[in-house]
Length: 110
Image (cartoon, rainbow, N blue to C red; front, side, top):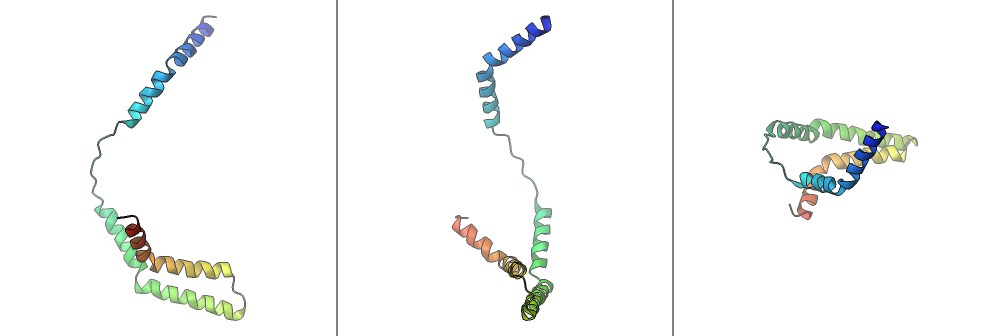
């Protein structure tokens, strides 16, 4: 009987202080924490290397081979449009990435 009574008392305490607890939680979540600067040079270097590789002559050669493959399958009558669309779309996204990014950053005001 004692444990049941103490459980009911605990529930009553939570009910009474629910507004206070929610307000305290929201205030604690709203307090900004200090930001610490980080050196992102290794990440930037890695991303620049990946970008350089994707814009390289080797990838341009692979893209040309992919387009030739799409043409050969079209000549044989075995081309699937989803496959051809994904090949052409991938080429457009890889080689048009610089233009896409510059378009969106200038339209966003950056």
